[in-house]
Each structure stands twice: as C-alpha cells, then as structure tokens.
View 1 (spheres, one colour):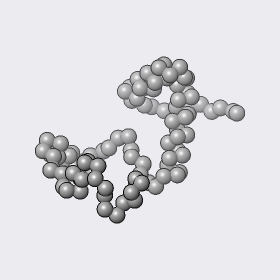
View 2 (tube, one colour):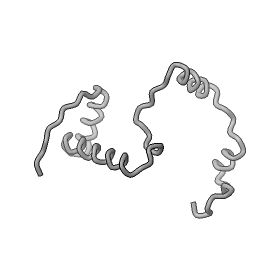
View 3 (spheres, rainbow, N blue to C red):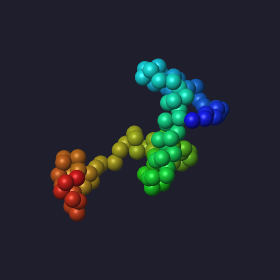
View 4 (spheres, helix red, strand yellow):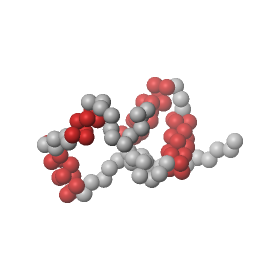
Length: 97
C-alpha cells in the first residue's frame, strides 16, 4: 500500500491527546490518525447526519446565555422523564428495549 503524507494544523490540546493515547497504547501517531479518519468518514457515510454529534459545539452569545441559564437552574423533569429514569416502560416502545 502506498502512503501519502498530509499536513494539518491542530490545537495544542488535540496534539497532547493524540500523543498521550498513542503512548499509552503503544501505537504510532500516524496509525491512530488514519484509523480515526477512517472511522469518522465511515460514520459520515453510514449514519444519518443528525446522529453524528460534532466534537465541538459553537454557540452564539444568545444560545450560550440560554445554556448557561439552564445549567445554573435546570428545569424540573416531567413525568415521562421521571418514569424513564425510574426504569418504567415507555408507552409505545417495544418491551425488549
């Protein structure tokens, strides 16, 4: 298999994560990056777009304020959420879930 070298700018934090993972698992950084790219590209091909969660969320100042407000004062869970957390069956869901 022929190889091609690519170059990319990444954050220092990402670089440190790559180095830590590669060192901890005894693999080369190039191998880790290729596997990660292949995995991500496969997910983009095979999964619906709304299922793939981006690793970074970009918030507008308005959406950040809303998220901050919800974190500081979360809404009370509704009955459906309480039932779900209690392990009760959800209506109209198959029993084997």
